[in-house]
Image (tube, rainbow, N blue to C red):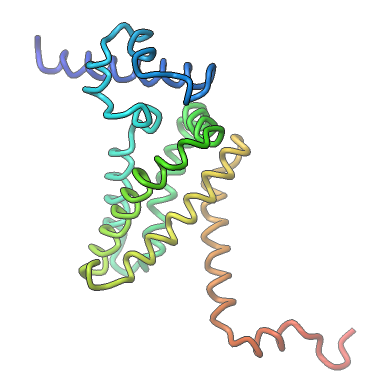
Amino acid sequence: MDGGLREQKKARTRERLVKIALSLFEERGFDEVTVEEIADAAMVSPRTFYRYFGTKEAVLYDGQDDQLALLHDVITSQPPEEPPLAAIRAGVLVLARQAAATAELSLRRARITGSTSSLGEYQRTALAPRWEDALTRAVAERLGVDPATDVRPLLLAGIGLTVMGAVHETFRRDGTADLEGVVLARFADLTDLVAEQSIAPHARQAATEPRAGAR
């Protein structure tokens, strides 16, 4: 078989597994569906399933590698004069546009995740470390530092992940939300919060107290 045709067949099989898995998760709940049932519905063997996805969770989060690579490329390709946080914002905006372009699929995944408590452990132990590592490495590359000895990339990565988590939760609750607008709003909130915290406590109090004679 021609290499191109082989790759097309593999892509179709992967897409079919994802489509069937999502439908079964929605119908019966993530925890109630087995890999064997997904494979059977897709008319492939469980062994074939595991050639594409290492775990049942992985089929729900298909595309993570591409997203991480895209995030890295966007962050590291921003103009040198852009601050690291602005570069992270640019990367998150691209992911938001991608999610909006496939809104139905993105929302289905978000709602399955939000309705399945057992997926929280997978997110904490498998997904979050990968995203944190990707963001940290991208920021370290921009700064030209070693993340093993400079804590700034890790701190900035944590900020980026926090914003992404807030955006994801907004989207899960309201699938019609303007994701780009939400991303920009959350980063603006962050900027305002940092600016506020940089003011000495007595100065903040003075700024909020009414002036003498003010009406």
